[in-house]
Image 1 (cartoon, rainbow, N blue to C red):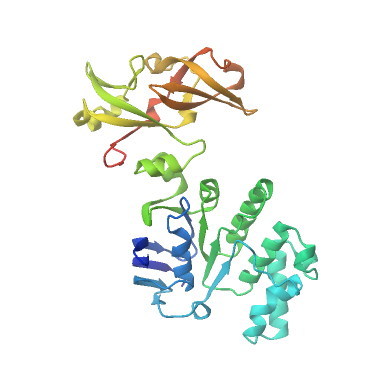
Image 2: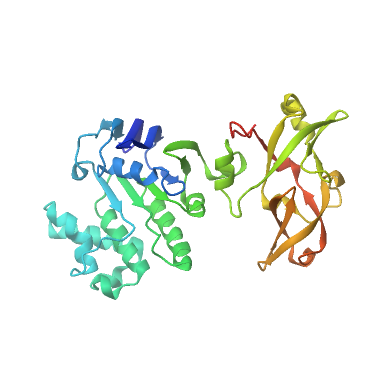
Length: 365
């Protein structure tokens, strides 16, 4: 078994608390991604799991055993680094087999493991090349192969795709996901790229300021964020946020975002939001939920007119930017419907996907 558990883990550097009492359970074979902005504590957390960084307090369990005092070599983990860390004078085969030689594996067992890993990663024909003769993506595959041959309890990835170009990053994301489906090993993956996190993970751990903001599946994070930080960090382009006030409107409620724009709250949420009438709130709505009017049965109360500031054609869709009470808002519309900058455009807000946020606590209500 290779569950990984963190219990009240704290890491301080002098007076700076880089990781603030985090608790996390990663079941056997799960692929978990730690994501967040620079300095949020995700890499420090990974390094503590690996044994490369000492804990200030708390416990880390791997396979049910506390590993706080075990050196990295005794934790039965394999780590893939951002910079590949390949020996330049060795061939790909020698790089992948080096750790097994140090552990006194037989030549036949080493050959079997390396050949199997090379087949999984589709690098069999590259085994006799040295790193300088390999592309960035090929070097990353060799680095992954070096980890796979170890057959460890846990794989740790520290921003492994950061040095690759955009096209290769997409390709390697698919590669890593495919490898995990074939080699079902508990995996902890660190990245600052929320798209990487969403596409790779079984569950995503969103970190901010050394603490965990939310742990959930990619779909839950996207559609049901618990805080403003998570709502704004997950999704590209980011969620729109607007100052607003909740108003009574007959038996229903409306959200007032400006003198000219007032949008209806879905009837199913009236009871939930009733106590918020008159309070200053923040409205969150993703760009894909601000479109040109499309359906004939739409609620026309959800429509409003704006003057466009910027229009960005993207091929299959067009991004439109406009101001609401001094706040820049982004919508996603069909290319044929987009007017030009400076022109007035009629838009539709899908209020079934609205989020109301407390501006003091930053919690989604």
